[in-house]
Length: 377
Image (cartoon, rainbow, N blue to C red; front, side, top):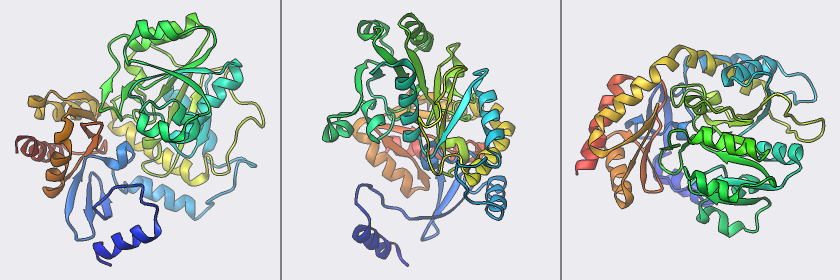
């Protein structure tokens, strides 16, 4: 089936809420191929999802092996690998005594975090940050700032006030003891890779403590090695009450979840899900963590290689998250890169690079050369 025929079929049978122009048919490592066998270095990675690259043999083998034993059983029963995975995640998070609730996506993870904050604090107000993104389901959308996403669906279920990212005084001005939680991304990804200002994570933690509010750290995009640590908040000394996660947790198999500190958990019947933490997802996540344990120490160096190669354009970089402000130039730069074998992403007028964490130096240098050509054209 040629690309035009497939596009016509998509336009006929799928809701047309996505903009796309390439049919990717296979991938390996940090490279993908389209239906015409054109090869690309993938600096999008499913939007920071394919952490171990495409079809990593250890991940693929783990999924295949589990699929031959048990695909689904539901949380009415103990699920193979689930408890061990929760233990590993708690240990990676550093939240001693923490507990995990698994979900199927980042938006679901945020929904779980918000529900947990509401039910345990008894409070209804939330604070989030401008330009932040926490998902598109109704509860998560309540905490997502961008008006294009929010306004068509108002009124939204949760009361949320938005503060400028990094503005401590602005946070203090709207904070009081009626706030259930503050939610923050350690690096704002959708906004174009904006790291929290130095010390701001610790400041948010202090303000939450002073007002008996929970601190939710959204690690959906930044978690599982993306920034060179298991979780991006670990670049600071702040300890969250709840961490949300998804994307890179299982190398592309749909999975998400939260970790909550000791003493903060759902009680029976307060939350649930049919597919949450299923056998296939757990197998993929275990294999993903196995691979990441081998490479996490090299992620910051790879990110610095990207940063140095693009230094003329003042990139923002934290691990393998790189952002460059381009404004209206972003779309033609993206197009040039695609035409020359590199996939990149535009978000909010910024070029965003979130390649597989297994990308090689040779692939970084090739991607940097094409991106520089695009920026100079």
